[in-house]
Amino acid sequence: MGASTPRILVTGAVGQIGSDLTLALRERYGATNVIAAGHRTPPSPLLRDSGPYDTVDVTDVESVASAVQRHHVDTIYHMAAVLSAVGEAKPQLAWTVNINGLYNVLEVSRELGVAQVFCPSSIAAFGPSTPRDQTPQETILRPTTIYGVSKVAGELLCEYYVRRFGLDVRGVRYPGIISSETLPGGGTTDYAVAIFYEAIAQGRYTCFVRADTVLPMMYMPDCIKATIDLMEADGSKLVHHADFNLAAMSFSAGELADEIRKHLPNFVCEFKPDGRQTIADSWPRSIDDSAARAEWRWEPAWDLPRMTVDMLTRLRERHAAGDLYRQK
Ligand code: AKB
Image 1 (spheres, rainbow, N blue to C red):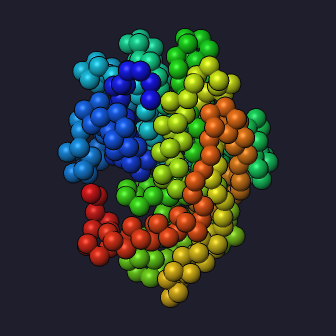
Image 2: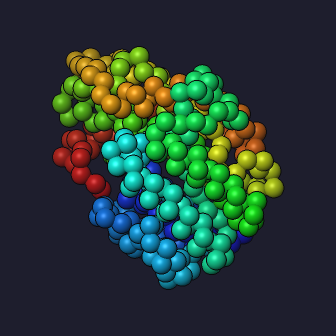
Image 3: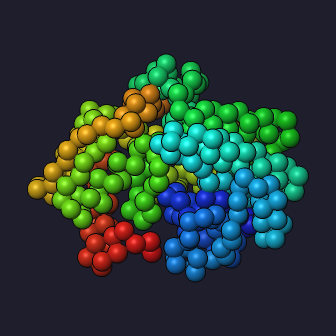
């Protein structure tokens, strides 16, 4: 950790990554230094009661600016975004939130002297013409979803603010993130979380991509570690800024079902692909993250077998307590 304690604003704090990230940041930097910001979705009691909570509309520059001033913020984790599947249903909303929201966060940061901004990109920045195996750091970025388009534009915008204004903006291309606390909303990789919940609750799941669909995935503890490690990394060692490839594991939906079945032998998984299959087919199967490993010593800790055991253990406990689908 650096010399002074950051004053952090987390936008999208009610979301899948934002909620776990906020709690981890509160643990690390002190609860009062981490302001969770949500918009429409109400926060879980844990998020609301474990530190400051505020309402921020990232599409409204005044709302972002006044939150930064009100809370004396010097660091923003900008997690508010519309994901790939919802983005395809509502492309205009995806553009407004993902592009105008990011622009507002970067402009407010520049004007008000925010020291550091984290802005996530995604494997969605890649497209059907990108090499799909061990996708390189520098490669073709021609996505076919509005979410992917917003991620490529966002990466370029962040890089522009780094070079033009000297703003310290950092970010990674997240793979699908699997977690046991907050459900994801509106992504293509959501099946890799839903399968665990439904395996525990119902003993069966209907998966919306084919069994042979392979995508890069990561367990939440690795995601949180990567995010905080990158923000704490020595900036002078970074060649890249907001577009780091990031990897932990890759597996097919069928392999995931088989892994769950090792622990729940009666688990039944059916595969009925819907429109999200086309999105999944346009993304890489595996990622070369050697730039992240070289520049800030990224190394994942979780693989498929260990993650599966941990997910099932945690969700079993929540199910036994009667709160599997309730936010803590
Ligand atoms: C999505 O599926 O849209 C996200 C992502 C890979 O960025 N989880």
